[in-house]
Amino acid sequence: MEEQNNSILKIYASTTDKIENQTLYEYIVLKAREEGISGVTVFRGIMGYGSSSKISSSQYWELTEKLPVVIELIDKTEHIVRFYKKLNPALINMPKGCLVLIESVNILLKKAGK
Image (cartoon, rainbow, N blue to C red; front, top):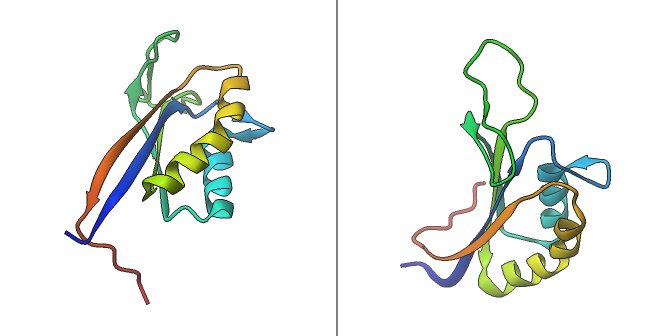
């Protein structure tokens, strides 16, 4: 195994959630880049719901604006925890709900491109 003491931070939210007039996922990606987080990926779901919302789905041939989104950030655990502590107040003050979790991961390969 390549590296240990790494974590993945997962944030489950909605594509319509906003912080400071930006979509939540864009806000987090830009802040993570500023903080030097190793990697971030945003996944848009095709169907889902949260504890206080109705089911959102893109199964019909329409543009559904509210869909589930998962934002994943991977880095050394200490960097992830530090980043989350800075992000937490903005998430707490956000009018909509979200779910945040952290998991330990073992990175098998971390290869930068040319």
